[in-house]
Length: 305
Image 1 (cartoon, rainbow, N blue to C red):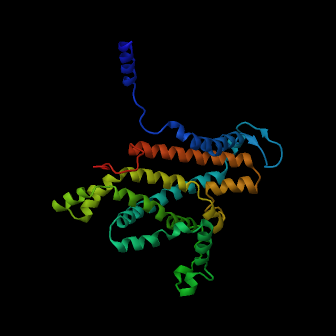
Image 2: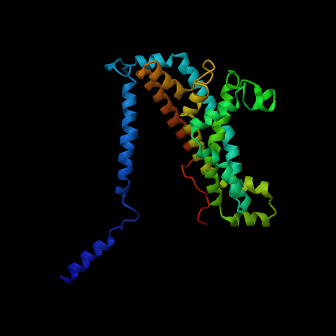
Image 3: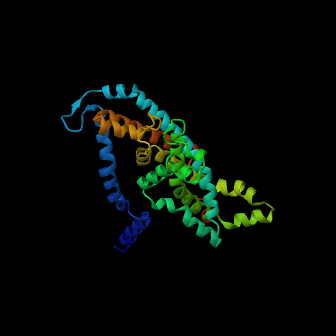
């Protein structure tokens, strides 16, 4: 009996111990994600093959919606504008956010004081920001007229050549604080011993930035780039309040086009097709970025050293 107990005890001790929290802790989050994200997504995909005006009966029409939307000049124009906005927003926001994040990661008190002002745009609603910028850029009573600056009195939002670029500036002003905060956290994870060693070797601030800081936050750059690009595919409220897609269709991005088709033209099937296109663009760009970066982590390579 004793030998059998010892053998049984030995078998129990050989079992691997469970390390970390149970996977069941993720069940509530997965349930909510499936209920409020996956389920509506499946509904939109199904609706893209239907004819529905939002009130009447729903009928199946095959790929007619897809053929119609992919040949629609407004959808193609919205796709082009959305890609331009996405690329330019990333090109503008990324370097500025990195520099601000590195600056705010310093320990000097005045940097923390200035950081408060950098984060102020995060406290304002998108609608309030859009109304404020629209009034500031108004050629009749905006800042150009108020201060007598002739070039500022230009009708920036009413000119098809400048309206989209104004949207890029306003979007960047709104979201640079958020992305700078991510870089600030990433830079603070870099061990100070690396900078101390570089200083002893005679490396200046610029050399340390390119040789230490940038390589150490490459995963953060990849993750933040994903957030910027995916976020650029969903801008609606700012554009709707500032230009409503105008002048003409100069700022009719895909999200706005989806809204106008669904709730102005009562073409829910066509609007669903545009929504699926936006989703496909977001997933494709995210996968490409993750593939290029080689990782989806958002931390320093030397974390914990």
